Length: 346
Ligand SMILES: NC(=O)c1ccc[n+]([C@@H]2O[C@H](COP(=O)([O-])OP(=O)(O)OC[C@H]3O[C@@H](n4cnc5c(N)ncnc54)[C@H](O)[C@@H]3O)[C@@H](O)[C@H]2O)c1
Image 1 (cartoon, protein in one colour):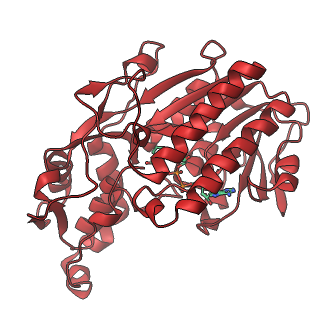
Image 2 (image 1 turned 180 degrees about the vertical axis):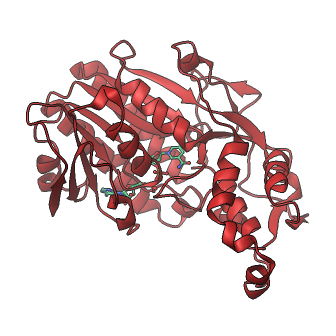
């Protein structure tokens, strides 16, 4: 395990540990926390095993805050011991995050998300942590009938969803047994720009494909199915919101911006990239499913998502603006490929 420190640390300040802080959500969260008045004088410690090699997420961090980085694995005791030195609060984001691929790497998914997740919360108990926020997913639900809330009986369909549900259950049990202040957030599929972004979920992937001049391929049967989505800025706002609340112990909250169908996502992309080609394939979909979530429980506490699907798509299209030139598009012409296997919830 290696480490570095940047910025002007305040030794007496609070330490917030962000596991998986070099990921899509984590890389934005640590930047947002660094400039947030609530975290002034706070040390933001990141532990990440860099499995996705997103070293770029550690570049150009705001100098205003004190950062510590540990390249380490949440499954290893030695790394956890180092990570948990003097920690006051934890945002637990580390994990194996691709739902469709979790069928192929079931063992790794459970090992990291369940065994690793368990280790993180056990160290939090041992270290007398003040607040623990676990980042779960809308994928724990499985297919739903109508719009459902947090009381709905979850039946996840992917190993990813199942592993996140097991970790959630464990977090809440530990919270009840030990008194640790745990809050679970079930985030919708995230979209929008962050420096550590992934392109294996539907909105970002489709926005990229549209910019690169490649067709969007959708199953006919999936066009009307709805899923919950959330802008990355709303995801980080929700995590910060939960960190600051001491009155929501052992509670679970859906955090969603919008339940949207594939047709709606395509319409939003068409507004930004009007000449995008959409290919509808009649093949039945095996693992697509519809689920719509009610996000009002967290909204009743005063949390409101601020961003739309339009915002997320616009950000990605702006970042890829150079690909939109016709020369670039012709140079990149490749055989259309079905990307459905990779497009799912996370
Ligand atoms: N992005 C989404 O759409 C979404 C939606 C709902 C919930 N979530 C949850 O939010 C969290 C963060 O998601 P993300 O999109 O930022 O994912 P991500 O894959 O971008 O980030 C996860 C990070 O965890 C790190 N990691 C993986 N295994 C590790 C290990 N053993 N030890 C230490 N670090 C490890 C990875 O290197 C990566 O940087 C995850 O728990 C995910 O389940 C994400």
